[in-house]
Amino acid sequence: MGALTNAFNKMVGRVKQMIQTRDQLLLDVSHELRSPITRMKVALALLPEDENRAGMTADLNEMEAMITEMLELERLRDGRGIKVERQDLAMILRDVARSLDQKAPGIRLASVPNHLLLEVDGEKMRVVLRNLLENAIKYSLPDSSVIDVSVIQSDNWAVIRIRDDGPGVPQADLANLFEPFFRVDRSRSRKTGGYGLGLSICKRIMEAHGGRIEVENNSDRGVSFILTLPDNNPGNISSHLAG
Ligand code: ADP
Image (cartoon, protein in one colour):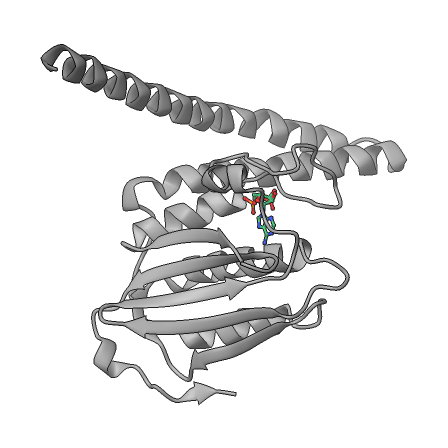
């Protein structure tokens, strides 16, 4: 038993070290790529304007966006990189939903209180909500019903649920969804966008708040993302529902 425990502990240590090495490598590569990309952009700007230049500029912009996201992911490590203050998350939620409202299949804030005052980093929570709602829209099907957003308050937690009616996620992939660069459909196209970093950034942001993010397939169709945030002042929250 002792030998087994020992071996197991050693293995855990090695896995931890492997993950750290991988993360450090990602960070180093991201940093190193920044200067050559900037140089290439400058060089490209000096070339005559044509289709090639436009295509290369688009590619470079994409690489730059990806590197920015990777560095952002690192900045949020271990609960760092956020600045919390008292914010009305219900207002932020309505704001983000409104900005995406024109896109099918639409967003319904079914049971969201008028106010949800929490100690959060407003800008970072905006990133999380926008990511999840944009995904819900992006992965919706032509016959998908409206995306449903609801808030439940319990004891010392506020729980936000975003439910879509898209294709859902294969059960075996659910556990990997928050891993950097993970995509259910491995082939990335310009149309489906993303590099698979969005959800890992969401996870880091939620953890930095002392909260969490979970995902489950709905019993009928689509997935629900569940955000849980600590609520240290539950008595303060309005129980009135916005229409
Ligand atoms: P991406 O930029 O590729 O969308 P994300 O990190 O946001 O990256 O998501 C990772 C993967 O999770 C996506 O590529 C997609 O396969 C899957 N996914 C995310 N949201 C949904 C959703 N609402 N419905 C179905 N699949 C989803």
